[in-house]
Image (tube, rainbow, N blue to C red; front, side, top):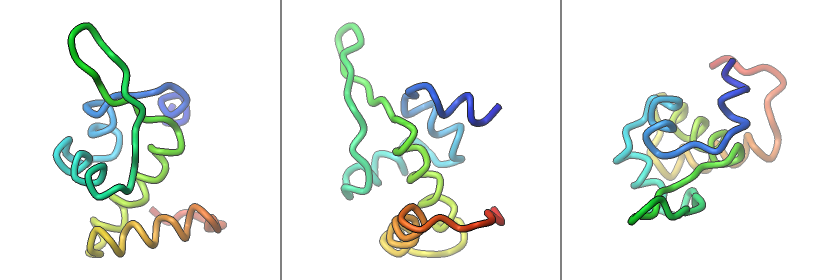
Length: 91
């Protein structure tokens, strides 16, 4: 079920529900340059759209942040894990 969600592009409010992060936290990560979502015009405004790679990266960053790491350390750990995935994911 979770995999089916990841295959579609999602917006920031959807991503907040998926990751457990707030929309403000996700915007902060974007400002820090940790993720750069695509933007799509929707009527009179632009909305963010996150792809699978963005979602995976943000899930890892949020996971490490919730474990007590700083945002920068959480990002570094997430990038290392993306480059060399763990055999087992213990949550």
